[in-house]
Amino acid sequence: MAGSALRRPPRFPRAQSVADGRLGDADAVRWHLAEEVPAAVTFNGESSVVMMVTPADLEDFAVGFAVTEGMVDGAPDIDGVEVLATANGYVIDLRAARLTERAAGSRAIAGRTGCGLCGVESLEDAVRPARKVTARHAIAPDTVARVFEALPDFQPLNRLNHSVHAAAWCAPSGDILLAREDVGRHNALDKLIGALLRGGRDPADGFVAMSSRCSFELVQKAAAAGVPCLATISAPTTLALSMAREAGMTLACRSPDGVVLFAEVR
Image (cartoon, rainbow, N blue to C red):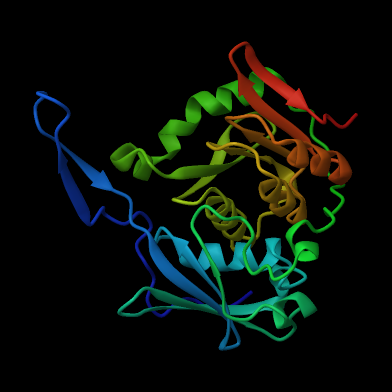
């Protein structure tokens, strides 16, 4: 994949808004607010979807979104990414010689920050069959617990505003190798997957840990990238668990008694 952005947003943008607040008779407090802006993703100049995102790592986001949402068959099909700042947000254009039918059928659809159903026009598109995951890693509960303990150190933006999610890529040993943040949990995962693919790394070589609950679209996206294990702070939904079993993925979450593994592949 070649090409780079004309205007690259900062890796971790400074919080542009600071709010004053007061709780009862307590001293006044100030906090940084997370940025949330519209980003239009286009393919070869054709409008596809508008998402609400944190304006950082937008190239990563667009590549990850294209792969996990099935707009392209894989990162090698993407020839370049261009990010342009506009008065109202950003336009991210992906150049690709070959797009899937799903990309051709997704035009000018809006996606809200907390919504994982991006570019969906029908119920059939909402819950697509999960891709089978072939990679396998033996991830111990203690390993996942160490990752959760270390995850806050990889959330510089969240330390400022306490309101964004993180997705981290981890070695099977439990070392966090890469992380991305966003106001939307699925956006954070797309950014992470896009960063891995743009860096020539195979997501199947490690596992993903996230600061959110495990909803089905996270499993769907992780499976599309070949991630064998997804660990989330909160438990999965029933649909997420069912989809993980269908894909052959391992799910893990944190409970009051420690880390519990779900849908473990043996």
